Image (tube, rainbow, N blue to C red; front, top):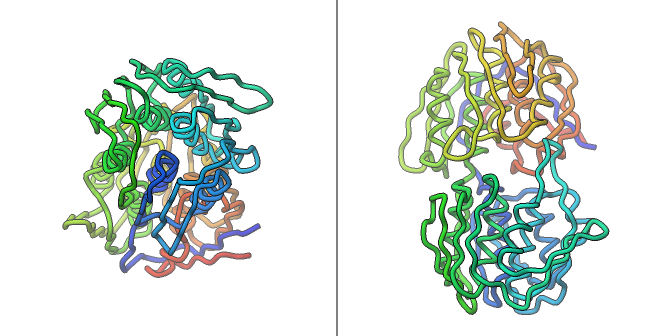
Length: 416
């Protein structure tokens, strides 16, 4: 199993190109199931989760052609309406094949999903919405089995804001008969990116970017071209890295308008940011200023950036507090950071951080995707050598992170 070895204390200087967003690419790839035409995608990140999703889509009969960050999908010959446990168990986003398969073919059998162990993420809202649209759904043997001769438009209000639930129901509604209204819809930029592709494919969607989406179903969708949005989580992760280590880096292929709440917190930390078009220059000298925050749904502070900001807070010049409201198990990185000398205590869903003068390298273990990234940041800020185990989590959501960081001066190598 691969590990990362990091020798800390190196300032970062240079340029990093931000990849396409994992959380946008996965639902966008599933949209290829909705049409027999070619869906031509660019800026698709080279990630383990993307490879898993493409493998899952290929086994349905979807034709996949890939060259670097370009992927072309063709759904003219789909002949398997099952998403098997072997592929679904490692990635929760696999549930996103349910809506498209059901809407276009009238049936789908999808294994209950897995993914990172960061907390309960039930699929009941997906099922509730599809049932409202007329689907018959049973759960047997660990599989969701859905049938519908033709989905019908409906007014659906989810009990909570759910990103994948919004995406699944949005894709299903594009081919349903009549009007579907999704209320309490997720507003994340990745949902908006999916909606823009669907419109390019011929879908009729109003309210894009709001919490109320109105979809007029159409008989069929056609092919389209689309560039996946830049990854705001990856961009913020690299900005946290330079805030922790010091230095001067230029991020390219970015979109600052989709993570301005994180930008504001980075400014509070003392990171000097200059935005020009799709680039961000980040400069840091001295110790970070501590920031407190509370995670919440977009446009609030993202749960996917919580661990990385906590890593910077561990060496900040004072105390801070972080409250996690989205996932109940998302503080598993705390005890690993404390192994590096951080002083973090937790009480319920709140972490209390006392900034220390220095961290010291030690062996640590990654527990989930964003925890992995936070340990990379902490290791880069620490004195001595840090060895991070179980980095397969990192490969699920970051495109060759150690390669990008090495190119700007980090002492980080992958050990096979």
